[in-house]
Image (tube, rainbow, N blue to C red; front, side):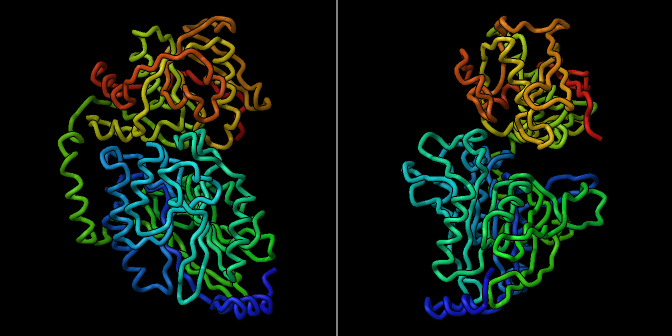
Length: 520
């Protein structure tokens, strides 16, 4: 436990001012994913960097000891990212006054180069304690495990962490090494304590479930600013918002005998997290108050940020308006759907991959749920909508797989069904599979058919998929050594070409994926 006399003695010996009460107001975002502009939720628009800027600058001026933090995944998700690869976002983050950011997995989607360019322009530290970048020349000494900031005349520590799944779900390259998470966090916390710092924040891109484990395992962490799982916490009287996944903050008992506060701010800048924390003179959390603030359209736009958005929009205006298809029904790409069950948007993506792969002999296609980043509203489909659905710049790959390997892949896809992970697999037209959730992981898939016939374990099938999945991303190790044909066709081009071919896309759920014994 943090004892007052020990804290005071440490402060006196080290000449710090940490052994005194302190109030900090944490202003935070996570999973912005390049959303410079507002997005529609329900009947209304939310988010956008111009209004986020207004709120952050307003509260930074009025709140006690503001600390502006990001839980990572600033990269990837809109046409702005495809054009600027994070360099647009860092301009706004500097203008808003961010003080630290966690590295997210999508920060590596274009390899170390794009992240290095982002960090070179950032006026704030970019943090991850559980990766070793010392062998990567582009990132060496740029991604730090933690930072020490001055808040209200006292030193506070901010540690960063990124999901351990990073090598599976992004492209950090061979020189970036993962370190054991809990050990790395504890080492950084102890290093900060050795400097006499007794107020420690974690900017985390680990996800809500793992962040709760961290809070219960690693001594000394007072506040976790979360990311990665796109988690909405708090209390809202807003019909446009989904149900909250937990209280804001979520309180976890820490091994040091104190409490750790865990917060998150959903996604895409739709809300701004705002948490006021009072620390006692022993450096422990004593009291708190706060709730995320919806970023609504009645908030005035920051004038400078508005001019920045307008300027950055000029090069992409013509491209984003181009109509590439139409849908009379809309296509569902909801995150909670595509990572657990059949989805019309995922069906279209799988069908588009199959169509693009037919010349190479593909007879079926897979689409990982984590690769479906949005849906499409009813009406004309623009290039911008297509690239929002498929923003990664992946390419189409044709993989030779035996029936046994296909079954193993589908088993892997449903093994973590309850965790809503991106490895859930969707299949193209003509393919169907059934899985039974009453069975243990690894033996859940009970049938797989192609054109009404069971697939044969020893037969080889050509399967179209994106190169990320084909290379073993999301843990599909059964694909790594398979024979592959790299087509070089971009994922967005696969989708746009399909829209243009079909014209009006009115996909329906067809029973391609059948779930048995789903828990109520």
